[in-house]
Length: 162
Figure 1 (cartoon, rainbow, N blue to C red):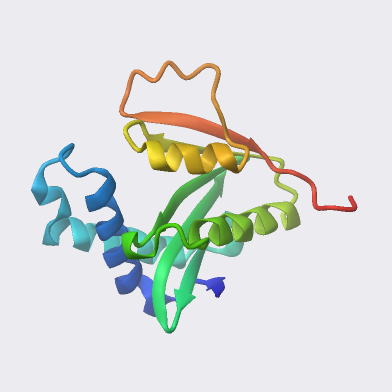
Figure 2: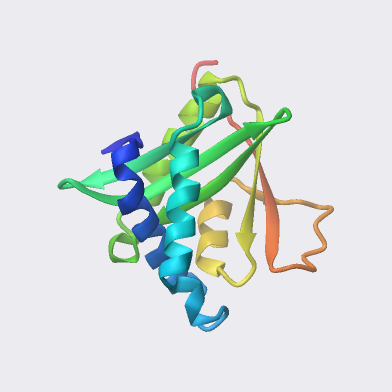
């Protein structure tokens, strides 16, 4: 089930986010990045995101048997929409959770009349890059990939029948 995240979900979302990052950043960042201070910082950030006005963005949770198994968030500011987060608990990878979260974002973007969305993906996270490519995201032609992340863009497809 995909639903809008609630303030009561923040602790579960932050913990899931930490587990996902620990998996795809393994060996690439210091271990303290996955420690208590980072988890507290993550909770604060997720609390702000969940508390945003819907016109500024949304946070969606994937839930299975009462457990938060994935999360996606986007932000609209200064006329640009950014998919800021899309994480699936590693224990739930390859079960369609990411695709369902992505579909919920697409639906929200279509309803809001958003035509183009950007994201940044960690350069070493080839699994995520393959996921986004399979959903139509394209590399930014101006992106020189000199940093740790790549910028991707998606033209939001119109709903069938439009």
